[in-house]
Image (cartoon, rainbow, N blue to C red; front, side, top):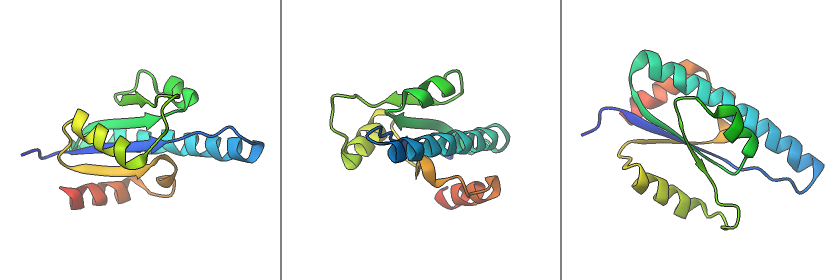
Amino acid sequence: MNSKVDILLMAGKKNKSEPAKMVSRAIELSTKDTIEKFLKIKEKEKTIDKIVLSTNSEVLINELKGKSIIIEPDEPQKKFHFGKKLKELINKYKIEKLFYMGGGSGVLLKIEDLKNIIKTVL
């Protein structure tokens, strides 16, 4: 049995209007911030195995290259279905203990909050 948790974040980008582009950029920045928090926890606490980011954002893909995470680019021609994508990633990475977050949802959480959630999952 795995004594570590796998982190999965999904962050989608929409470019249909200026307001949608602004929201997408905020989600990208929040996602980067959240990933940095998880990387700090992974380094110090040793409670995280994999950090997986699923995204259609080229900006995020480019900005996070070289980080100790797995980036799963969404296929642009494929219609996104949350449940199917979640199942696909769980199976692909053999995830047993999952901590899922939407990319934009971690911005207000402190590292201590994330550690407590991880302890609950474990």
